[in-house]
Image (cartoon, rainbow, N blue to C red; front, side):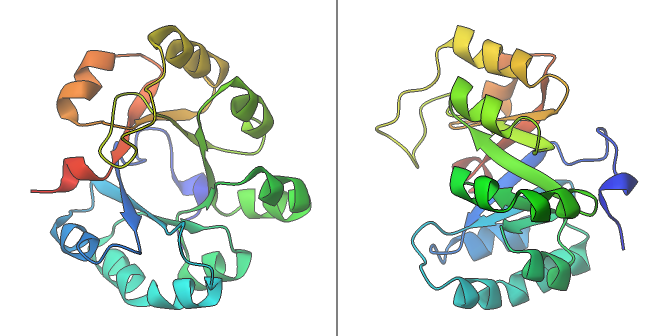
Length: 195
Protein backbone atom coordinates (compact mmCIF):
# COMPACT_ATOMS: atom_id res chain seq x y z
CA UNK A 1 0.00 0.00 0.00
CA UNK A 2 1.22 3.50 -0.82
CA UNK A 3 1.31 5.99 2.00
CA UNK A 4 2.27 9.64 2.21
CA UNK A 5 5.98 8.81 2.25
CA UNK A 6 5.73 7.24 -1.20
CA UNK A 7 4.61 10.56 -2.68
CA UNK A 8 6.63 13.65 -3.41
CA UNK A 9 5.34 17.04 -4.49
CA UNK A 10 5.59 16.20 -8.20
CA UNK A 11 3.62 12.95 -7.96
CA UNK A 12 0.56 14.43 -6.24
CA UNK A 13 -2.13 15.13 -8.87
CA UNK A 14 -2.21 18.70 -10.17
CA UNK A 15 -5.98 18.62 -10.59
CA UNK A 16 -8.59 17.52 -8.04
CA UNK A 17 -12.26 16.85 -8.68
CA UNK A 18 -14.45 17.71 -5.66
CA UNK A 19 -17.10 14.99 -5.77
CA UNK A 20 -20.26 15.97 -3.88
CA UNK A 21 -21.91 12.67 -2.95
CA UNK A 22 -25.31 14.41 -2.84
CA UNK A 23 -25.20 15.05 -6.61
CA UNK A 24 -25.79 11.96 -8.74
CA UNK A 25 -24.43 13.53 -11.95
CA UNK A 26 -20.96 13.60 -10.39
CA UNK A 27 -20.76 9.84 -10.93
CA UNK A 28 -20.61 10.41 -14.71
CA UNK A 29 -17.75 12.89 -14.25
CA UNK A 30 -15.86 10.48 -12.00
CA UNK A 31 -16.13 7.67 -14.57
CA UNK A 32 -14.63 9.95 -17.24
CA UNK A 33 -11.49 10.82 -15.22
CA UNK A 34 -8.04 9.34 -15.68
CA UNK A 35 -5.45 8.77 -12.97
CA UNK A 36 -3.87 12.21 -13.48
CA UNK A 37 -6.81 13.74 -11.59
CA UNK A 38 -7.40 13.15 -7.89
CA UNK A 39 -10.86 12.94 -6.29
CA UNK A 40 -12.01 14.51 -3.03
CA UNK A 41 -15.27 13.04 -1.76
CA UNK A 42 -17.49 15.26 0.38
CA UNK A 43 -21.14 15.74 1.29
CA UNK A 44 -22.07 18.66 3.49
CA UNK A 45 -25.77 17.73 3.50
CA UNK A 46 -25.54 14.14 4.74
CA UNK A 47 -25.99 13.75 8.49
CA UNK A 48 -25.69 9.95 8.53
CA UNK A 49 -21.91 9.51 8.26
CA UNK A 50 -21.97 5.69 8.26
CA UNK A 51 -24.33 5.72 5.26
CA UNK A 52 -22.10 8.27 3.53
CA UNK A 53 -18.99 6.10 3.84
CA UNK A 54 -20.83 2.94 2.78
CA UNK A 55 -22.17 4.71 -0.33
CA UNK A 56 -18.61 5.60 -1.23
CA UNK A 57 -17.65 1.92 -1.55
CA UNK A 58 -18.29 1.39 -5.30
CA UNK A 59 -16.77 4.79 -6.10
CA UNK A 60 -13.66 3.99 -4.08
CA UNK A 61 -13.39 0.62 -5.89
CA UNK A 62 -13.53 2.43 -9.22
CA UNK A 63 -10.78 4.85 -8.12
CA UNK A 64 -8.57 1.99 -6.99
CA UNK A 65 -9.02 0.10 -10.27
CA UNK A 66 -8.06 3.20 -12.29
CA UNK A 67 -5.22 4.21 -9.95
CA UNK A 68 -6.93 7.48 -9.00
CA UNK A 69 -5.82 9.08 -5.72
CA UNK A 70 -8.85 9.78 -3.55
CA UNK A 71 -9.55 11.67 -0.34
CA UNK A 72 -12.42 11.00 2.06
CA UNK A 73 -14.01 13.03 4.86
CA UNK A 74 -12.48 12.61 8.33
CA UNK A 75 -12.70 9.03 9.63
CA UNK A 76 -9.70 7.01 10.78
CA UNK A 77 -11.70 3.78 10.40
CA UNK A 78 -12.85 4.41 6.82
CA UNK A 79 -9.51 5.90 5.73
CA UNK A 80 -7.80 2.66 6.78
CA UNK A 81 -10.55 0.44 5.36
CA UNK A 82 -10.50 2.18 1.98
CA UNK A 83 -6.73 2.84 2.00
CA UNK A 84 -7.37 6.45 1.07
CA UNK A 85 -4.67 8.79 -0.20
CA UNK A 86 -5.83 11.40 2.28
CA UNK A 87 -8.39 12.74 4.71
CA UNK A 88 -10.33 15.99 4.28
CA UNK A 89 -10.71 18.10 7.43
CA UNK A 90 -13.37 20.78 7.00
CA UNK A 91 -14.19 21.80 10.55
CA UNK A 92 -11.93 23.28 13.24
CA UNK A 93 -13.65 21.27 15.98
CA UNK A 94 -12.47 18.06 14.32
CA UNK A 95 -8.89 19.31 14.56
CA UNK A 96 -9.33 20.48 18.16
CA UNK A 97 -10.91 17.23 19.41
CA UNK A 98 -8.69 14.80 17.48
CA UNK A 99 -5.13 16.12 17.75
CA UNK A 100 -3.63 12.78 18.79
CA UNK A 101 -5.50 10.80 16.14
CA UNK A 102 -4.49 13.31 13.46
CA UNK A 103 -0.82 13.01 14.39
CA UNK A 104 -1.05 9.24 13.98
CA UNK A 105 -3.02 9.53 10.73
CA UNK A 106 -0.46 11.99 9.33
CA UNK A 107 2.09 9.17 9.30
CA UNK A 108 -0.05 7.21 6.87
CA UNK A 109 -2.36 9.66 5.04
CA UNK A 110 -2.20 13.17 3.61
CA UNK A 111 -4.24 15.64 5.64
CA UNK A 112 -6.15 18.07 3.42
CA UNK A 113 -7.81 21.36 4.44
CA UNK A 114 -9.58 24.24 2.75
CA UNK A 115 -8.48 27.74 3.75
CA UNK A 116 -10.50 30.92 3.26
CA UNK A 117 -8.66 33.39 5.49
CA UNK A 118 -5.60 34.02 7.66
CA UNK A 119 -7.15 32.61 10.85
CA UNK A 120 -7.91 29.26 9.19
CA UNK A 121 -4.44 29.15 7.64
CA UNK A 122 -2.71 29.68 10.99
CA UNK A 123 -4.94 27.16 12.82
CA UNK A 124 -4.47 24.45 10.21
CA UNK A 125 -0.90 25.10 9.08
CA UNK A 126 0.82 22.62 11.38
CA UNK A 127 -1.50 19.66 10.89
CA UNK A 128 -2.31 19.69 7.16
CA UNK A 129 -0.11 18.64 4.22
CA UNK A 130 -2.24 19.99 1.37
CA UNK A 131 -4.23 23.23 1.32
CA UNK A 132 -6.94 24.42 -1.03
CA UNK A 133 -7.02 28.23 -0.90
CA UNK A 134 -10.54 29.38 -1.72
CA UNK A 135 -12.35 31.05 -3.41
CA UNK A 136 -9.90 32.28 -6.02
CA UNK A 137 -12.46 33.20 -8.70
CA UNK A 138 -16.28 33.45 -8.69
CA UNK A 139 -17.76 29.95 -8.84
CA UNK A 140 -21.04 28.28 -9.77
CA UNK A 141 -21.08 26.23 -6.56
CA UNK A 142 -20.80 29.31 -4.30
CA UNK A 143 -22.22 32.20 -6.36
CA UNK A 144 -22.71 34.50 -3.35
CA UNK A 145 -19.16 34.17 -2.05
CA UNK A 146 -16.78 36.90 -3.22
CA UNK A 147 -13.38 35.72 -4.44
CA UNK A 148 -10.30 36.51 -2.38
CA UNK A 149 -8.56 39.74 -3.25
CA UNK A 150 -5.29 38.96 -5.01
CA UNK A 151 -3.09 40.32 -2.19
CA UNK A 152 -4.93 38.11 0.35
CA UNK A 153 -4.58 35.10 -1.93
CA UNK A 154 -0.84 35.73 -2.29
CA UNK A 155 -0.46 36.31 1.45
CA UNK A 156 -2.17 32.99 2.25
CA UNK A 157 0.06 31.21 -0.28
CA UNK A 158 3.15 32.80 1.27
CA UNK A 159 1.98 31.81 4.77
CA UNK A 160 1.58 28.19 3.63
CA UNK A 161 4.55 28.10 1.22
CA UNK A 162 6.17 25.05 2.81
CA UNK A 163 3.03 22.99 2.00
CA UNK A 164 1.33 21.79 -1.18
CA UNK A 165 -1.05 24.59 -2.15
CA UNK A 166 -3.92 24.32 -4.61
CA UNK A 167 -6.34 26.98 -5.85
CA UNK A 168 -10.08 26.36 -5.49
CA UNK A 169 -13.16 28.26 -6.62
CA UNK A 170 -13.91 29.02 -10.27
CA UNK A 171 -10.74 27.22 -11.32
CA UNK A 172 -9.99 25.78 -14.73
CA UNK A 173 -6.89 25.58 -16.94
CA UNK A 174 -7.29 29.17 -18.15
CA UNK A 175 -7.71 30.63 -14.64
CA UNK A 176 -4.82 28.53 -13.37
CA UNK A 177 -2.55 30.20 -15.96
CA UNK A 178 -3.88 33.63 -14.93
CA UNK A 179 -2.91 33.02 -11.29
CA UNK A 180 0.52 31.70 -12.32
CA UNK A 181 1.95 31.70 -8.78
CA UNK A 182 5.09 29.72 -7.97
CA UNK A 183 3.41 28.62 -4.73
CA UNK A 184 0.51 26.80 -6.40
CA UNK A 185 0.85 23.10 -7.25
CA UNK A 186 -2.48 22.85 -9.08
CA UNK A 187 -6.20 23.37 -8.61
CA UNK A 188 -9.44 21.78 -7.55
CA UNK A 189 -12.95 22.22 -8.84
CA UNK A 190 -16.29 20.79 -9.86
CA UNK A 191 -17.64 22.47 -12.99
CA UNK A 192 -14.28 22.45 -14.79
CA UNK A 193 -14.60 18.66 -15.09
CA UNK A 194 -18.07 18.76 -16.68
CA UNK A 195 -17.92 18.11 -20.40
